[in-house]
Image (cartoon, rainbow, N blue to C red; front, side, top):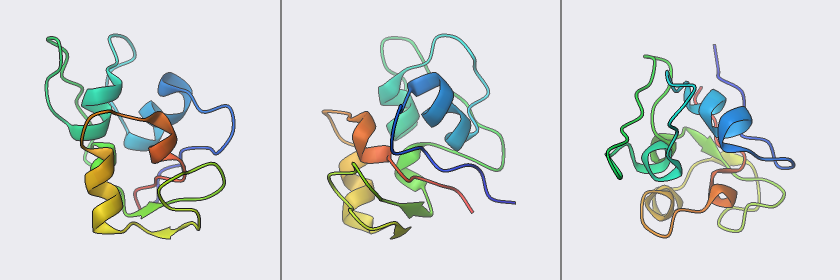
Amino acid sequence: MALPKVPSTNVGIYSGLRVSTSCNETTNLSLASLCDGATHNGILNTYSAAGGPAFQFDNLGGTNNSIQLIFGTAEPGDLLNISEEPFNLSHTIGGQYE
């Protein structure tokens, strides 16, 4: 079963990205760690088997996503953009694991 998409409005780290990546933590969330899966400032977020860091999304895009405007299969270059600094929450819009 697919995880929920990162919403295109009212996007939040806790309510949007954490849920869409199936992050196990509910506190000490790091946008950088949620995007690239690495440790940042001592914070490493972990994921259930259904999810993972945002740079591994199956689908991506939609309204308000500046790197992929149409929702669909995530393009490798766009996923690379998610995993590199500066980390932008808007780049994860429409992100989804199938």
